[in-house]
Length: 366
Image (tube, rainbow, N blue to C red):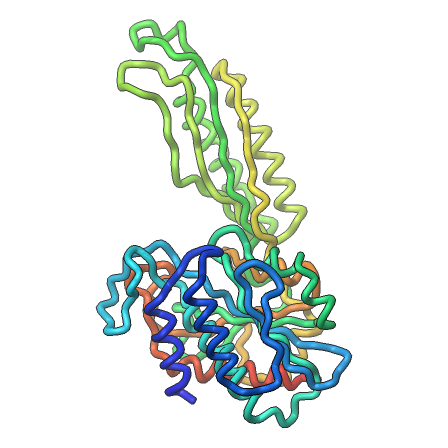
């Protein structure tokens, strides 16, 4: 099977596409599924999504999910199967994810023994951008095909090569993008008293939020600001400043508490500097929370499954599925240490065999 997995992964690596705009990827996935000659129903329940339904006559269905989109990254791996699309690259392993799920389709079509539940394979768009998983959930496909559990994988560079790991409960964080705008009054710096300095207000806000976050000890969370713009020239008080950052949490309560703190501190800093402010918080992704009962059943089928001691501050739109039905998300080690989203991201395709083996056992859980 390694030859098939490698072929698929490398074929897809050459044609990375972004967001919902995935014509070549979708065509490849559909063609591969159709080539199996099985009785699987191949269809698209919503925009830029491909599904394959294997009907085993059950009243219940297990879903397996893969993402399909790539990143706007200029590839620097030097591999012979590098991207043929300039400025676009599979730098997050989604080519490997698709290869594993298409490999599973091959296995189901050729050796279905022991599978007693129906299987729905889901190839979704836009994991990296707007959350294509949410579009799939809203399509009603899970209700129509009686899906009551879902599994997914992500390649993970920080785990040993071929290792399988996850945890019950919180695994990955909720993500909200934060934008704080301070509006002041510009003046010449020689007459600074006539202005209200939005740059100072923005800087003070970041400082005060860092002080506030240093006191957070009750549960893991993160708020960091990575971008700030302000002013026009060096000798004029800035009329505006815009600070952009990201909030990561593992519970709705903590997310609400910190969002309230952001708004409160922004308002107090703005008032102190004679400015006004606006705070915009994106809806973002919920946290990935693995269902405890389903995780326990997966653990029984996968004795090599290692337990991660602490949740991770990465976000993933698999969480949208878990808002609708029990789900378990797993990590598959590449052992390279090359970060996700890096222009040099690559992995040994042999790790995909370990992931495929897990999928084969998961779809056989009664």
